[in-house]
Image (cartoon, rainbow, N blue to C red; front, side, top):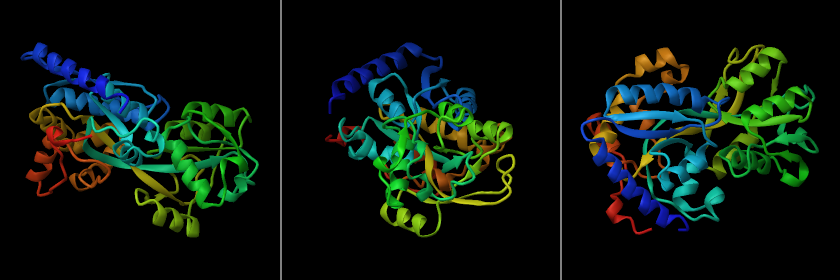
Length: 326
């Protein structure tokens, strides 16, 4: 609730920008993630297609990731952004990373894109299980990030707390460098695999992955329904000779609730009508489908996106901003 006044101002500013844009393209900022993660590279490709096939002129920018993107949409700095599906749920309900800020309903879902894999890795071959992290220096993502809460979930399911490890709050790139320099023992990264930061480290130094499987995985799935099972297939990274079982959340695009329906419809079509072309530019494009895109249950869809899915035989939940009593 703290930021509600800002969000009202941002709605007015967005309306002014739409009027000023006239017959030209509406300028939009697309919050992605750190430059070493999947969000940033993939966001640049999607921004290109939305710009080419809609009346939006989209610029993909590096950001602090899921929570920052949601708050920046609320503040009017971004008009669309990436977020993990679990963080999307936190924001809508005002839980975990949004517990102190309270819920925000200034965004709507455009669609899910691909699975974001919870990747736990090390350069120490003696660290084989989550329980082996006890007493170790472990990067658990930047404080309050999606990675941070995923790491807490995994640690808790394994019977560990932050007091049982030596937590480090680092970005993807900082985690890579810290592992390389021997400053940490293991790191969590939640992103589409292969992730550039891990690929670089695997190529230059070699890494080992710690699986999240068996009873640990079962506990996570039963307690946190936003997770699903995931396998990092052998060969995904240099030197990786075996499949790694783990869990994942969904990489989701959200947009400002104030965007016009017809514009969001065209933005949705710009992505899902061009799956083959996008796949040729980024490997994550191969995971695009209207079925997966419409599967998000963390928050309501934008009416413009819902119209596109309806035309493809799929109904999704929407919420008219005028009916939102938050």
